Length: 359
Ligand SMILES: [Zn+2]
Image (tube, rainbow, N blue to C red; front, side, top):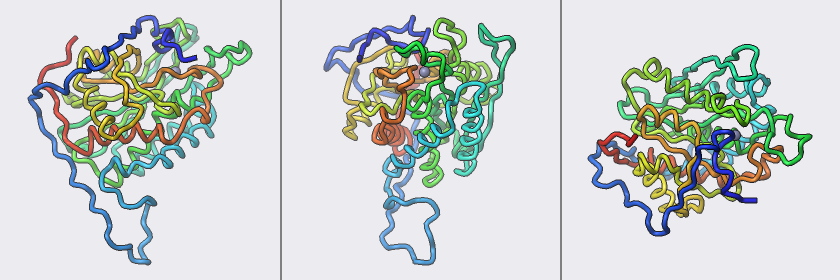
């Protein structure tokens, strides 16, 4: 039940192409990058003495971490996944999505992020009237000139339309993996950044309306990222992130990523940075070198020239099915994604080639 024949997301699977990479033919790390440099944060000093009994630590329960990557807690991330499932399905028009939007905003604010929302409307093919969607953003270290964007969709699908049981197809999915997993990772990263402020700026974006479309209606998918791209100048002026990484379905207990193929064509150095960190950390999800074309929220960013890629494990038998539940996911998988993002992009400098992404 692990077929590559269904590469792609929803109707947009049509355009997806899986292209195998020769084993051993993985591209060299970013060649001669004319780097703009960034400075990795000094390691947070580990506490050498026990805190005085009178001062209760505010948040941290784990031993003092020396890097942000080490500070990422799989347990806390998992708690965010479970909290989302407890809200019920987070599909358009359902109360769970409104509850989650408040949760996202409150968590970002509690972490000291500068928060914003992008509201937009969309009328789907079968809709009598447009409805409103909301992207939620939180910026850490907004003064920094260099910044990165980390995004994921927080909405879940209104129909389990891929379920083998026709009786289940009319009902919303729980979206433990498709929706909650990426959201949980970025919520935990927000906690880490609150505790260990980054040197670069980090914009966390929770996209709405990624999974709104019926299976055969291309234009009703990826609404939040498309709105973000359209409103880019309004949101950010001329400022652009060095890189953007989108997460989707990062919770599978048997997590294995493939390098997104369009990113590999246009910004292979970005995938190299992530996979290099994954190899260093000996994370099984990054052990492979294959690539696979998937249409998702990173496409709208690539289309406006932002170096963007996607971390997704699309080899997930419960995709858009009633079975997309927490028992198929694991805290360790959430941590693999969090560790790579923090190691590769926040804990140490990374190089950005001067060339623009290939179109
Ligand atoms: Zn989906």
